[in-house]
Structure formats: C-alpha cells, structure tokens
Amino acid sequence: MLTFIFIWAWFGDFVLISLPEIIIIMFLMILLEILEFVLSGLAAKYSGAEKRSAFLAVIGGLLGTIVLGSLFFIVGALLGLLIGSYLGAYWGEHQAGKSPAEARRAALGALMGSIAGKVLKSATTVIIGVWMIREIL
Image 1 (tube, rainbow, N blue to C red):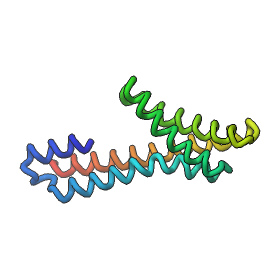
Image 2: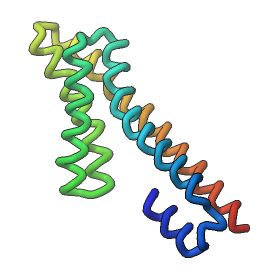
Image 3: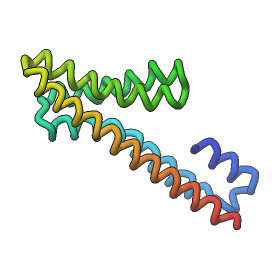
Image 4: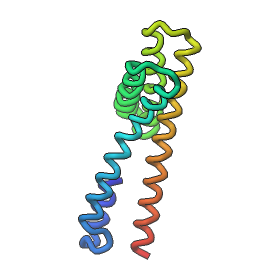
C-alpha cells in the first residue's frame, strides 16, 4: 500500500499527498506490522503461555508468513501468520511439558492475537484508503 501511496503522490506532484504525510503513513505501517506479530505473543502470554512459547508464537507467525506468503502470495501470508502463531505457541507449551489442553489454550490465545493484529492492520489500511479517496474528491 505504501508503494501505491507514493506513486499516487508522485503523479499528483505531492499536492494531494505530501511527503510528510507519506512518512507518517510509513511509520504507522511499520508500527502496525510489528504490532501484528507482537499481539500474537501477548495474547499467548495472557492465555497462560510461558515467555518462550509467546516468543515462539511470534517467530512462528513470522516464519509462516514468509514461507506460505512466498508460495501463495496474499492468502498464504495470512494463513502463514495464523498457522505459524498457533503452532509456535503450541510447540513451545508442549516442549515445556504442559498438557495438550494447556498447549491448545495458549496456541488459541496466540491465534486470537494474530487475528486481532490483522483486523487492526486491515482497519487502518481501509481508513487510509478512504482518506486518500476523500483527498481527490
């Protein structure tokens, strides 16, 4: 989306969207990317996971996004984030000697955190898109 915003601004001679606005949007998008993964770990921790499992949920989401995203583009990135977060937290709890039910609870927390991060990021993207459309009308 940032590339699209920059091209849009370029063709409009940076009148509709100024360079400071692009920089603000860039920092907002970087923050949302980080938050998307961190929410997975925080939700896993809130669901009773150990710190190691919460960390593995974040790493699993990142690796899943990279691996499945490179194979199936957008849908793969989303599925990779969700599956990777779940499996990372589950594996971490399993390795810590917790019962399968406790591991599933922590993994479900990580999954819910990933979904919350994705919803927050998507909502912000829609808001930015609406703002851009309103700028040209």
